[in-house]
Image 1 (tube, rainbow, N blue to C red):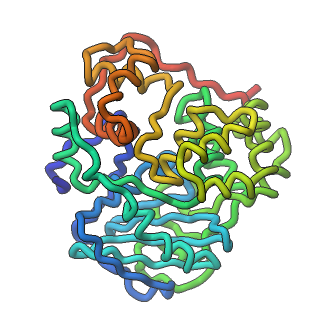
Image 2 (cartoon, rainbow, N blue to C red; image 1 turned 180 degrees about the vertical axis):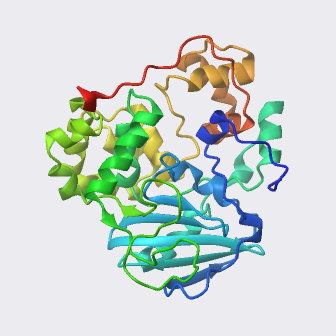
Length: 355
């Protein structure tokens, strides 16, 4: 049940895609922002923080904001150009407002982004902890963005480093090489006009929102700027290979999830961990379980069998009863907050930009 009596999110629940949306229960349409609008009444409860949470790359992600009026803002590079989307829920009705060349595309995609194509009823809990987590999160649905690169590039940045390092690199590169998000200059609607400046939804350096760089811009980032952002040559080279075949990558949206992963993994440096992280967001893939993760096997093993030392093979064995829904099961386990206590030092944080 959402509300002020919700448990305080832990690092594990946040990793499960939980983002706090302040004032969501009181949200309403922001007046006078001048964008294109759409209303949609889904026949299920919508929890914006749960559905859209996996799309945020850290609390200062320049492409994602939550605001005190209960809205979630996203800046995206759509197939028809940059766009900004504001989403809120009022009395069970989803209110969307969008700006920029990509506005119509974002509003058309809105129901799918909020889980219209997901089928949570196909999931049958096999463990008490999973059943309880599902009961506590009735608004959980799997998002489907219909965009590949916006998940692929930050997922590559997250390879083999701490989340803080990856979030910092994403933030610095998007702010420096992206474009200001189209739309009003304030995410709250107070005194906002329908200009073309960045949305300042609060939080993060400068407070503004940015649309991620286009593929050609990623390809032209100098080597020293990758270095300053703390991105090693291996990850930078993988991103450069990806943007060279950006059109082929985006074509994977039209494939089923397994075939889409195969398409992504054709690029050297994109493996099963990265491809799963992408299709979970771009396709709403309910069975795309993340393998090769440093922490997930131990969390799943501990939650389902008391085995904090579980590896990928043990995790997959434990998730076998959820075949077809393994990603959803893993998210519910993360959202349960049940995690083994730390027995070893945190992964050391590096900063090659200081070298």
